[in-house]
Length: 318
Image (cartoon, rainbow, N blue to C red; front, side):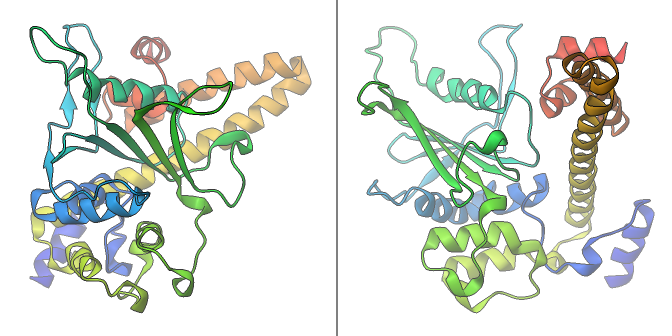
């Protein structure tokens, strides 16, 4: 079996990173959906959501996975593709997204995605407009720009509020964002289940064994499901492909950001700061779009990853 895996890895045509890893990276598409997006592991998702929302709400005891790819009502409406989309026993709907890198219009995208579970609750015929709760959970592998939140604040729960007296105007639409780079607790500092889940998400692929602080039964199962050595050849190949895509994507985004900043400064000094930055950003968008296209992504995936419209991507590729 080991020889087969080695041959499969060598045939893939790129450096295999998991030779130094025991557990999968949950920031990859394969890793996240393996742990949280399968029927056999839905208890992991329920444990995570209960820890995330442990503020007096009813405990989630059952979930049903829904179609994670949703089309608009009309032929020309944009498609929504979620990492995980599920419904609880009481009718609440959850979109759970792992965001690998910062994207332009990220908040707009979250709000747009939230319209799908809202609209899907409307039955045909007469209706009194009663809605169940909708939650959008974003696990962010980046920090919101412009120091929007304090350096020690990494969990953010957003609802519709009245700006005059700050009371919650509507409590059935909730956005929860986790700024993962801000979570810096060590194993010895883990106190709550939420702490433990944050630690696992942030450190899983770097661990060599299950930490003593994570002896809960749910984490015993998680580490078993995350162990790369027990995957068959198909799963191993899927993970390796997903891991390479993750590193290519994050590298492209990081490079685009650094080059855009540098070009903006250089051209700003020569031609005027604002004009130079704008030209630098436009050039970098074109380079980013071309880089993502070379990675094999289609136009819609490029638009989503670069935070552009399909029309802008088409223009930049022409």
